[in-house]
Image (cartoon, rainbow, N blue to C red):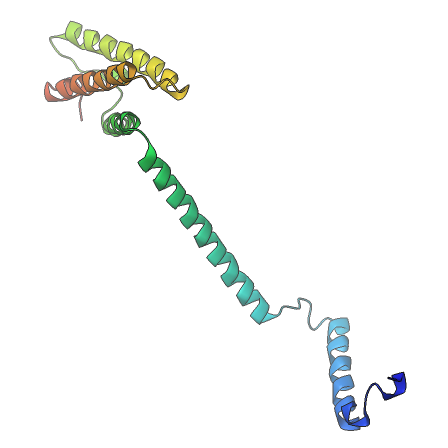
Length: 168
């Protein structure tokens, strides 16, 4: 094939089409140079990009929550109990003012001090066992001990609330 014969005359634009095309190009260039169109934005591309980013963000969140849920379901029961006790104590401590800061004039101030000391000792033992469980030591004995400490702390806090030693 010869280069002269690559396009036929019918393939070329008509003189009117050429004039319209060059006028459009000239208008676009002059608008940009005159400052009429400072920010050139293809609306369709912008909308598609925004929609794609939202879909990608929702898909990522869905994958993250799905993986997190599957990891939570695959945990051993001991860890699930540990998390449940921690959240219960944390929620109770949000509602109840800190035991160390409560000042209630009771006749049994010695009992209140003893309970505060018990809670402090329980907190110390709980933190030690939690550190062990974070290192991977999931022995049944330690997990049972941790649940027992949580139960003791909850029962002491409950008694103090029922006796009016902690104001609500």
